Image (cartoon, rainbow, N blue to C red; front, side, top):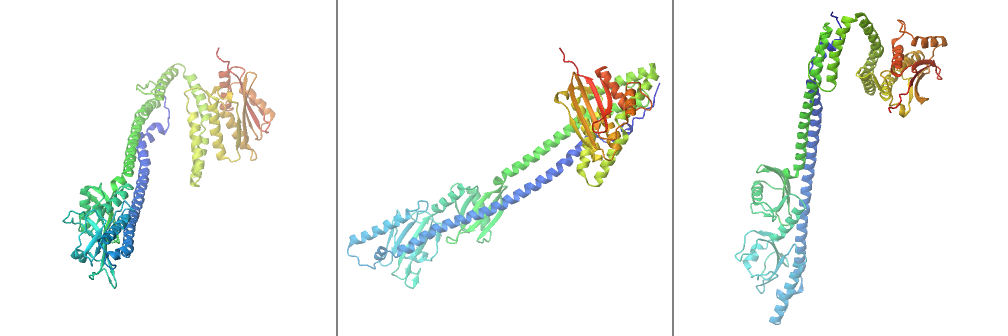
Length: 592
């Protein structure tokens, strides 16, 4: 015998034709794309800000280093100015009368002592001083080597500016900076034949000391550069890098300050340049951008790698969902389609895990039982199906669902997103619970969550509704028939609060006493007259009648079947003015 059953559009293959794998993969992609865009933008901003700050910092530090070098040179020049006026210096040049050889030696000794004292004040910046007398054609110096008097040397170098000599002398002297000063009356920085010339000079080691100190505080390679000449690098600089930067700078027109980003040997470098006003050369800092910005690049790459791994993991989850959810659902739908066509001999023979194993077994049992019942007790089965349909209709009211969906549509049109989310959350939780039929009983805690979802839905639709729930903690662990309270609360909302524009309070309270559990559902609606109330209580204990709601009758029968004869559902007048629904059952005895 075959029966035609309408199982709805979901079982006809419409919405389910779209792959669940495609849905979840698309959702993952849609989630990851904005995250990647935002991160890329933030990373670019961070690189730009750090690059700007680094450029400004490099110029500032180089300017500070230049000022330190100029300060030391100014101190040296100030000493030369003062020293040239010293009486002993004047005496050495022959302005005084030299009495004997001892007096001349004593004068030279005093000059050397003063020059050595000045040179030893700052150990990081030692300076050699030399006093030349044109009158006596002699020179006195604090250098470790004697300074010969050379008229051509004085004429060639007496320019009033600091001179950098990058060629070693015939005596093997190190490359040095020097400055010669003379101040004859009206003939400054010119030789007149009677001049006193004072020379200050220092080696490139002074500059290297400053560059080494500068490098300790940063990550660059500083050097001192003259266009077209070999630069003075710090002592730990890469010779190859210095040579390449020199070749690059030799081809540029340099200003007082400059910054360029260049690539050398496949790496990016920030070259910063500041001119020294007194020495005429340039302080150059070569900062490796890849090394400085490396942590940011590493974190960026790590983030993208993490995103890729998360995407692959999400795709893997989608595959698992497809394998463990969509495919079993498809098999279940295939079996249901056979049942739809009236073939109750349909069985599902497939491996599955978790809930689907139960569903497949239950489907096979269902098909087997339906086939047996139809063949043996057709009329009884039809009555049972009719009763079941009434119960399902009482539990899942289509008008209730349509009204909720209509509410969500209206709120969405009014841009009330919070109301849409709240209704969607409560509605999904409500239907998720009432449609799960694996167990006939549930804890009172689960039942109360369902009631809260239902009342929150009604409260969203009707702002007058407010409710209170008071349940003893030890009572919440009790196992009760599923959907035991929902018909009572629904009755209070529809026939209590809904029948009066002034009503709106629903109170749910539980108590445990004398070995019994009681739950009271009160409303402040218009209530019932005593005759109707008495008639309703009588009809609950009798057989189900055609004109009587199946929900309340089924609830009473299930309570009695689950807890025994001392259990019941009873209606009375509420202290709030409306109807009180009272459920009583005997507490189960603890196991010995």
